[in-house]
Image (cartoon, rainbow, N blue to C red; front, side, top):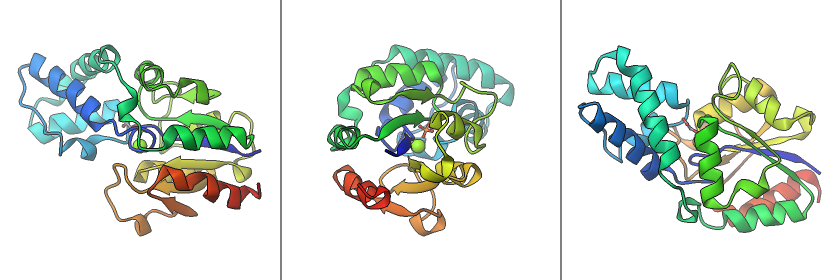
Length: 217
Ligand SMILES: O=C(O)COP(=O)(O)O
Ligand SMILES: [Mg+2]
């Protein structure tokens, strides 16, 4: 049995349209200019406070509006339902296979906890994860190691795996001394070779075999 922690946005869910909708609604309510869908992945990965700070800087808006933008975006995050169409292809089948092999699955995302719960419930992912750590669950966020250690829930980091899509996830795994597997179809900004990883995959249907190689089952 291996404890396997997963990132959420850009790893299990292609959530950029959902995130863009929430941010664009909040910006519009505040009478600010907007960001495009294409620009949105560049703001995802370090948590909602950083997204808000960077969006305001990008728009040349007053940084003091960060808390207001955060509160409004959170409301749209939670109020806008998620659905299974956001899942990358074959995610559920891969998680079923990993569960059936006896692995323990947990979630470690910088998305705020309340928004994470809504996303997990709406997409059908909720039953798969024994532990869920969100971006505001602890005093620190990824790439600090505490969230990942909490998501491992007592498992030995040296025996565990972390699966994510971004620079943030790779740095987190390094800081937490956990082996990192890179999903290449998410919201990474640099090429895969710039992010140290022990395996990479572009199709979820390939993940169970990668993990059974690594864990010897
Ligand atoms: O909220 C974010 O910035 C990204 O969330 P993630 O950690 O699931 O990729
Ligand atoms: Mg991610």
